[in-house]
Length: 303
Image (tube, rainbow, N blue to C red):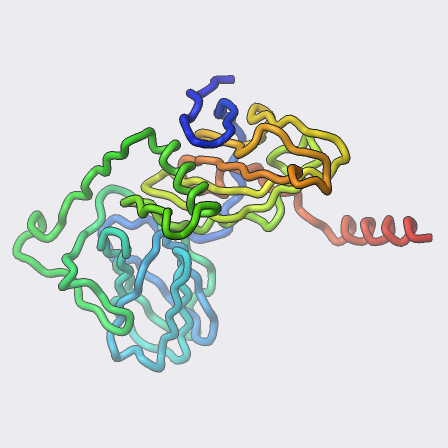
């Protein structure tokens, strides 16, 4: 197993490690953005979710007012058509850098409600602030030639390796005073799409692991997770025992005290390449038999 360099953070760190595992099955329709408008058919009366994994605002023409409900939160866009309408152009604009993704949306009784995840490839068309789509209306960027209308994304330079920057930003965002959290260009909140409790990450110890939040830039993301000891003994945390595919792993503390003590909880920062949920081993499927057996076990225990 290959060890990666230790991150120089102002935290209690252990050497981050790289691990490999299989990817969980995908549950959404994948659409690749290649500067060609994405076709999004909607089913009237049903909500369809688009996972943009960017902080976006949506621009759409006034003609859709009263016909299409649009909501955006944490990198996800929720579309619900109240009535049928023909193909109409929508714009998703990244609030961080102004990049625009184009959607051709239609609504009918034969549309789809399957979630969509947008996959990015290459550069994305960029518009100026004057051309940016607003929350209730939008305009597309227009210019003479294709070379003039499309701007290359500038490569962002950081003062430290990107995993260090991401982990430090996550720690400051969670625990630093709001006035001291400095905005870092290019880093945005992301949806981690993880279950409320993770049992496959550190199965060798009696730990309760809960996702807190996620941030990312480009293809790198960081997920902060609360790690709590449920045993009456001290636990030494070892990143080499983590199960998953991660770039780096950083514990805020090296040890966990026994359950019930102030030291029984810490935070883990995991940097991933690509989608955060794709780096974790899938949780075991819960079947009706499993639930019934658990309930029966609980009833026997109370007798």
